Each structure stands twice: as structure tokens, then as C-alpha cells.
Length: 128
Image (cartoon, rainbow, N blue to C red; front, top):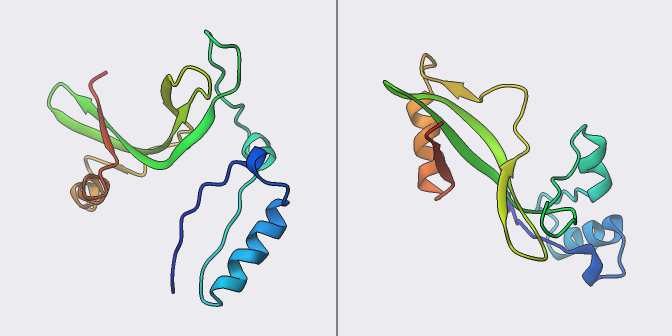
């Protein structure tokens, strides 16, 4: 199965999310197509971050960013998060963390999960 990641800025199109998904599915009958709208992000219980300087809502820049919390003795826990960016000034923040880490130092897959994020170039070490 093909997987395609596509970032669509809805201000740049007159199509609805449903129309975009249908068009993409027509390109490849085996492709997995998921469209998440701004309203679905907000309905998921998370308000968009707001840039204090520009007074505008930030936009999701990158999903699936791994944040590795570091303790004094080494890596402690790994979280899946999102990178948000201000459309005006470009300031970036990391947010959209789940209810808990996806892996922790005592889990068997901890090192493997860290390597997966590292391999994708999507790992940030949180020094606390």
C-alpha cells in the first residue's frame, strides 16, 4: 500500500476536505488517504497555540515529532508531538502531546522507538 503525506493549506484551495480526499483516492486506488481539518484538531480537545507577538493562531508544520525527555541519568521517556509555526513571524513551538509517553526507559521497545524517530530526522531532546 502506498502512503502519501500531503500538507494542504485550505486557504489555497476552494475544495472541501472531502473533495480533496476523493481526488487523491482517484490518483491511486491503493493509497491510504486521510484528511484532517482544522475543526477536527480543535474538536480533539486541543486549542491551537497562539503567537503572543502576532496575536494569530499557529499552524501545524510537522506531525509526528518525537520528544525525548532527558533525566540526569539519561533518556527517560519518548513522546509523540507536533511542531507548530506562526504564519506571520515564523516562531515555532512543540505541542500536541498525547496523554502519556509512547515509550519509557523501562519498556522493551524504548531504544527501538528512539531510533525510528532519529532515522526520520524527527527527534528532539528535551533537556528540561
